[in-house]
Image (cartoon, rainbow, N blue to C red; front, side, top):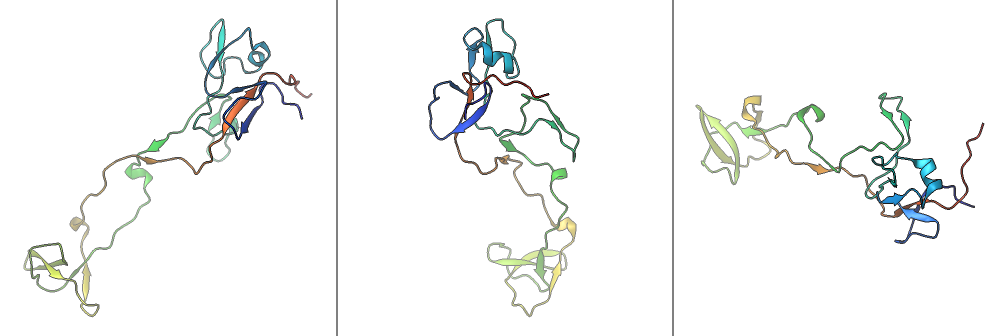
Length: 177
């Protein structure tokens, strides 16, 4: 099957086959690739009288153009988006609580390294881990502190690396009626 000019394919090797150019954001001369330019124009970079940009699909995925029915988001041809890393905000984390229990007995130590928190008469101390028969109590929300470091996390979906190429020497696409 002949490729259409402007068609993009992933190939399992690291070189451009005849008639194809790497989709790595490179700038190419209009005069040398007139047919390809007539299709993609300046969709992937700023205007120039002598050159144009190819799409850059390095470390990117392709999504369909158009309006997403669920959210109303509109994606234009050539638009880019997304982030490699994301730092979540409190608004993006589901509501949840953490259960923290302590012994209902006087503490035996002021060291938290080997025990659970115990409290008697307002003195906070630690007690060796209780046996399952010892009753426990849940602490109030004021007993819990802030945790986390506000650092970004990896945001990419699982992937398989392949190289994308765009055709410049195939069949010129003609729109159907």
